[in-house]
Image 1: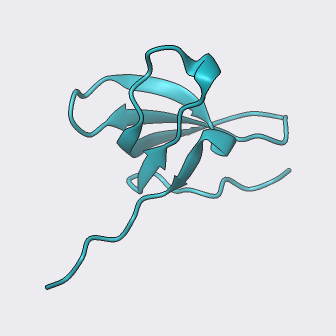
Image 2 (image 1 turned 90 degrees about the vertical axis):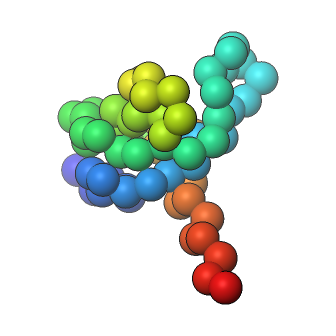
Length: 70
């Protein structure tokens, strides 16, 4: 069984495609790793700004950009 790439509490970026409707992309936080027998892991994530939670596939996520230190 493949391991999840992201961890609970990790900040990620949701990359939406044309078929994703009106789902807002951008910054999310991983809330839960979901069981899945397929090759594309699933996560429950919470949008940083509006607080809505949704289930997304790992292929829709990427690591959040690191903040600039200045």
